[in-house]
Amino acid sequence: ATDGGQALAAGNSRVLSARLNDARFFWDEDQKVGFEAWNDKLKGVTFHAKLGTLAERVDRIAALAREIAPLVGADADQAEQSARLSKADLASGMVSEFPELQGIMGGYYARLAGYPDAVADAVRDHYKPQGPGDSVPTAPVTVAVAIAEKLDTLVGFFAIDEKPTGSRDPYALRRAALGVIRLVLENGVRAPLTKVIHPAGVMIVAGQKLSGETQYTADLLSFFADRLTVLLRDQGQRHDLVAAVFALGDDDLVRIVRRVEALAAFLATDDGANLLAGYKRASNILKAEEKKGPLPEGAVATGLANQPAEETALAFAAAAASTAVDAALETEDFAAAMTALAALRGPVDAFFTGVMVNSDVAEERENRLKLLGQVRGVMGRVADFGQIAG
Image (tube, rainbow, N blue to C red; front, top):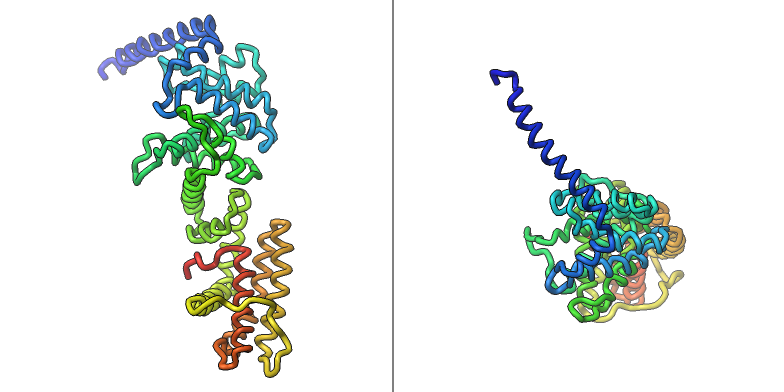
């Protein structure tokens, strides 16, 4: 510019000054109104035709935040109070003019009104995390309200069958689920998803009381599994390992991730890779036999006449591994569980090398099928190895 940019700077200054004057006006005016009037105004604002008003949504979030509070070490009264204030600033003049300040202004106004810092912080940060690059709150009250806010969205829209399809996700449910997952994992929240979802499921939507045991709960758990798979894949984990752990029916996200990490480390070793091959061979034999009829049940016999040493060795190894795996899983020492499985690698290899499973002698054949079933069962307590590629 010929004037060195002075005219441009002056023009920008006038625009910015006007906007800041607007902000000052709304800041002053909002302080004359307050939370009670704002929350009352939310009674006339529809959140969704089938999910009621914003005021009804606030009631649901508040009840859910109180339920979640003990799970995250938060004060239940403060969690409920924060939730009841969380959406009020949507009716304020400032947020009406500057929508991107929702939550942030609520936090300022709550602090100005004399609410505790924990409550003001929860109001400010309850939308977090809003994306993969956003920070995750760690304050217990904020965590309780943030999880409650996202779960109300997820349960509500799944209950009315408004699920994401393909690339279409108008209600940002994928982002909400990822937010819950990050809040749980990064704060080490030890609570099964079903336990967290259930209070959200028992709510009134469009005059109908929803049950946490209905089909949408299973759909929502599957949705969380997909989102966790995406998150772990972005962190370098294989999607099939997540599926192998989820297949166990566990929905404690912290424990699932620890299992996946231990499983990935195990399969990266020679013992893990070879044992996986042995598992698939055993599983294929058992599947073929299951097509013919029920598999033999009962204890594996040792000391049979002419019993190969490899069969006896695998029987003892499987029994020892079973005890060790159970002890390791009891203490959630998944690395120890994998070490216990690693001890099976040699006996399994030797068994398939030196033993004919489909013996002409019925007693021998049944005992060997029982033995393979035992090996599959022991490994299946750690993960569903059948879901793993390779």
